[in-house]
Image 1 (cartoon, rainbow, N blue to C red):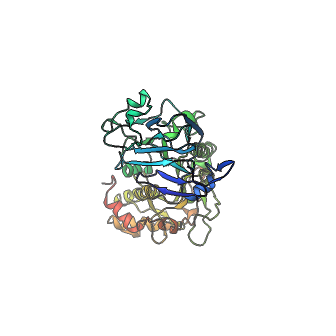
Image 2 (tube, rainbow, N blue to C red; image 1 turned 90 degrees about the horizontal axis):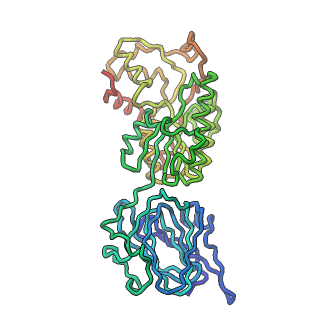
Image 3 (cartoon, rainbow, N blue to C red; image 1 turned 180 degrees about the vertical axis):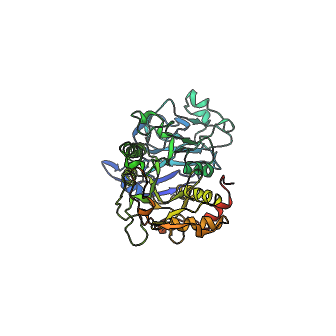
Length: 474
């Protein structure tokens, strides 16, 4: 019999992500009423905001009707409209809990959230039972399913009514035993900009497991009008956008302006729409160039943007688009150093060749090594840190480009006095083509990211490690 007057309470189970919910049901002599799914209240109680797109009802007229065990590639919110069921759920996902079983009775006052890849099954305990479920994806012939036999000896489900006494479909009877089940892999992670400095660091940090994909613009064009059908996007948990147009001075030309806005703004807006529609977590890498560099002190995540250059304007527009995604991490960073061409490698090469360079001394900030930036991304995703904007750089005191050049000369065994600091204006005298304005202050406050438990490396120690590793320098 349905219990009236419960408080809305969500309780975890031994299967990760499988959550039981006690539902308030209001009844009298006329019948009863309940809110089967109320997004605001249920999110507050601890249920995920899973974005249902379809509501299904399975009506069963006889006691003992038994269905399952089916694991589909989508999340389900399961409840009972009328009657009562014994439910059994088996984890069929890859991982340590593969094969774990949870059972419970459901009536109109108790429901359950079933995450993607957990097998769902039930047996009716009353006649005229209506079993309902909200799902967050439409059926697709390309979706990957997994099934388990209702009578699997390893799962050993204690069905209230023996299976040889109940109605079961021929298809359900033919499902495999647990030893033959192909576990459902995690939802996919897609890294864009895979051939760039950060893309290479992300590949080292994440690896090459089957659910990880790496792509460049030639593989996936974010401005393609057919982008929505380029992938089965519901199969993706996370997209990390490490791609960008970063030719700061070229962006000041007509062709460069178009390229910068296309890659850094329009492409991100398209990606944001997809991520919102399909419940994807979007990780987007931004820049100190969204600020004008006039602040006295380090920039926080909530400081208003005021970009000076076309590149900075296009990145600021991309940030705005990315933050519209319910599950987003926007990482603002500065002075990125990784594999390939970069300032540190250039200075090390000049030092080896005995060149005495003129280096800008009136722009200050911190280096960010791609190894650390990739580590911060992995940390935010793994820790479940609150979504939002985060600053990520190395830690330590502010340095000018000239200070860093001196450190490179010293750490590589050369005389730092060979480096001559100059103003930004002096450095660009005589240079051909348009020159983008640079922020003079690129310092980013790191309190928010460190509060999540991630500790950035000291910039001097990181620079020393980078140079000691060689990175292609003879």
